[in-house]
Length: 145
Image 1 (spheres, rainbow, N blue to C red):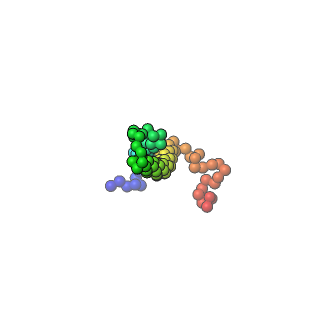
Image 2 (cartoon, helix red, strand yellow; image 1 turned 60 degrees about the vertical axis):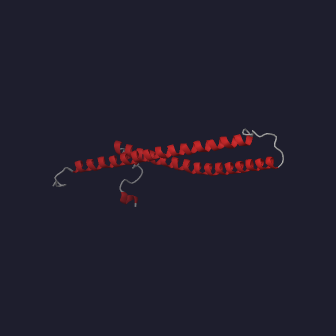
Image 3 (cartoon, helix red, strand yellow; image 1 turned 90 degrees about the vertical axis):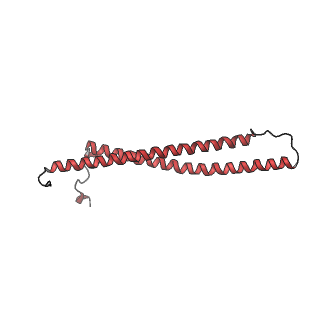
């Protein structure tokens, strides 16, 4: 069993520093993989929304109007069915648009969290203490309290 006192203090701190960088890198890589899967799912939902928009546009333009010169009840029934399809598609699009907005915001938060992890890793890698202390501020935490 190694005695921690037999190692130089710098070695223990170097190991801990390396462990911290490794943990941050692991977290960043894991979050990146999750973010990429989230983005792929978002893009698939965006494609479904676009298909709904295309269907709605075609229906509103009357692109599927292959009806003969019907009269009376048949024409009224067809108009009612088309109106129902329009209202259903508009509702589906509104719900889908709202969901996409929520997912887009979440994707932005994941991107921000990933950038923060990457910045933290760089901070540990470079050992730049100017990011945590400013000459005008007290350098000892008890002075800050």
